[in-house]
Length: 87
Picture 1 (cartoon, helix red, strand yellow):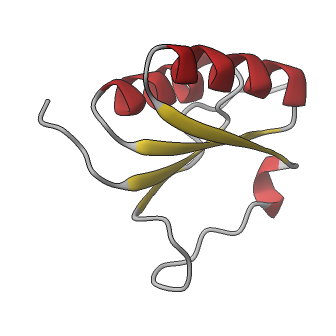
Picture 2 (tube, one colour):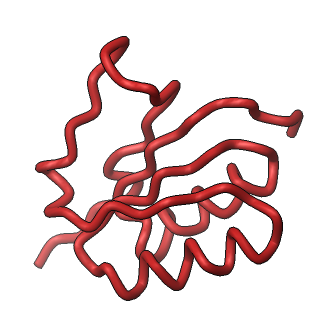
C-alpha cells in the first residue's frame, strides 16, 4: 500500500474492523480520526498509533452523531460502519 497523505475519519474505531482499519491507515501515513462511543478504548488506540509514529486523534460520540460531510471539513475520506452486528 502506498503512503496515504490524507485525513481519514474511521467510525467504530474502538475495536474490531474499525480499529484495525485505523491502525493500517496510520501505518501508511494517513492522519486518522477515530470515532466511537468507548473513549477509553479510543484513547488507548490513539496512544498506540502515536507511539508507533502515526498521527491520530479520538472523538467519543454516538457513532451516528459524528458528522462526515464532503468538502466542508478537513477530512479527505471516511470509513463508516465497517462491520455490523445484530443485538
